[in-house]
Image (spheres, rainbow, N blue to C red):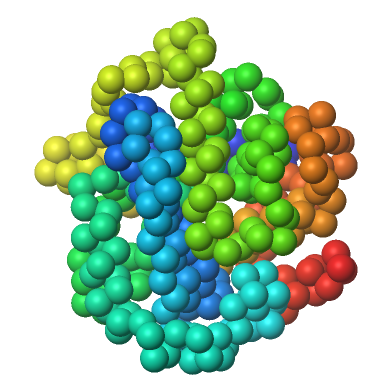
Length: 312
């Protein structure tokens, strides 16, 4: 029988193969969009209800933002409403008569993004949610190499400095606490706020790279350019395609488990969090990855709700 950590390492290696572009660190100079989404839930038919984004240019937040709500197409579970505080009547009560239609708002977002790369924290979730929403409205989906993951890049950079950050999931709040970024805990899980705080983390990561030449060499990071990975299937040999298809089928076929794990991990961490920096990361926090790996468990909203109630 494998040690529990071996499952985590095995998944991590496969994650790096399947989502290798998400780990690439783009050059500091350039325009990037930082995205966050809130959804009706974690099931296959759930969809985006809030989208927030901030703009970064040359390693600095510009203050330019994009924010929309999308009218819920199904009833949201109570556990989801507790997390993002968006009720089933929220859109009708506040935005029904003042917004453009949802499809046009998404077109506006696509145009605002333009050719820029998109950062997101745990980008596989936001990428999937956004593309499902675009597909629903008959719009072109964003390719995977359009995205970068601040969580994975945080692990690539800070994980080499501080061994504690070897968790599969590192919630946004934990990254903010590491950099001692002031924030109100109650504001997390608001798409615009989360994208703003993710942007602050990204800017801090660039500051770390700017002052650490050895780390740049170790990561093969050049501040002036980045080596892109070609995801065109025509250029992949058959073995690579078979490996990627196998990983898709065996590892990421159940998004409810993957994203449910992330949700519980965040709930557990938030229940024990406090203001401060890296010194606040105690052994109790480190138990997260052991208590909430749930490698072989299919999560349901009922299970999440029970765990959430225990934490209150």
